[in-house]
Length: 177
Image (cartoon, rainbow, N blue to C red; front, side):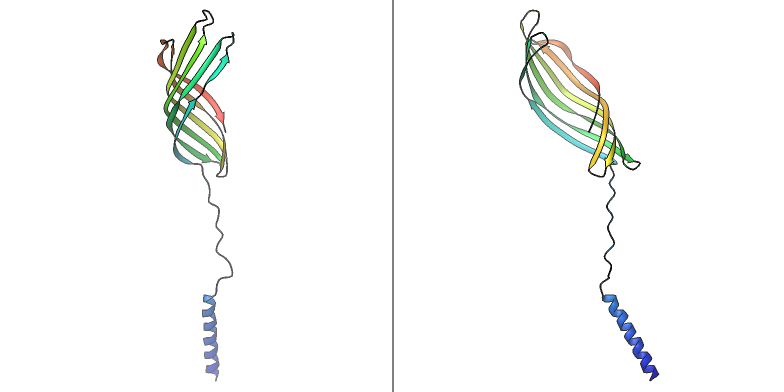
C-alpha cells in the first residue's frame, strides 16, 4: 500500500508540473528600450531652384533703377557630423553647384542722365562651413555655423565689359538655426 501511495504521489506531482509548463506566463515580454539617437555620420544632398522677378527703386541721388533677376540653381552638398558629451554636435559641410543667375539693371547716369543698361551674371557658387550645436533628441539640432562662400561675378554696361571676369568673390558668413 505504501508503494501505491508513493507511486500515485509521484505520478500526480509530475503531471501537475507538466501542465504548468503549458500555461501562459504571468509576466509580459521584456520592455523595449527606446533606441539611442546619434547625429554622428556622413550625409549627402542635392538642391535646385529658381528666381524670377522685377523691381523698381530710387537710388540715393534720385536716380531710378529697374531690376529683373532671373535664372536657376542646382548643386549638391556633402557633410559629416560628430556627436559627443552626450548632446553636443560638431560638423563640417561643403556645398557647390551651378548658379545661372542673370540680372539686368537699367538706370540713369547721375552725371550725363544717359540710360545705362547693366547686366550681372554668376555661374557657380560654393560654400564651406563648420557647425557647432546642441541636439534635443532625434528631432531637433540647435546650431551656429560659419564659413566661407565663393561665387563668380561678371558685369557689363551698355554691352561693354565693365568688369572683365569672371571674378571669383569670397566672403565669410555666420548664421544659425
